View 1 (spheres, rainbow, N blue to C red):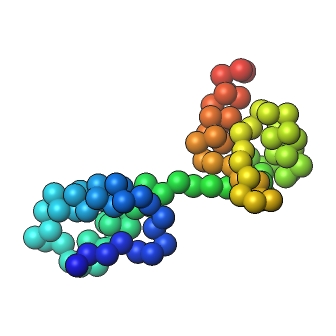
View 2: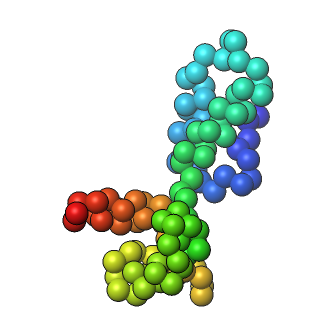
Length: 103
């Protein structure tokens, strides 16, 4: 039986989609290692990326306090996990796209 890695935090629907995709591929010339690597690439493309304030600051090459200020001003969307502030990759990309449009 094919099992997805435990570190893949994806929904059951996404698991079904991944498995469906796997069985539509031509595996005659693929080794089990290739199949596993292909499966991981599919899963990684489906898993959401979430950044800390520090990671976001590193990506933008700015100081973390600037990221915090943008969050406080409502310019950059974020969410809390308990006391921890996190930024979703899509929100960061939207922020960057919006900044490009205003210039």
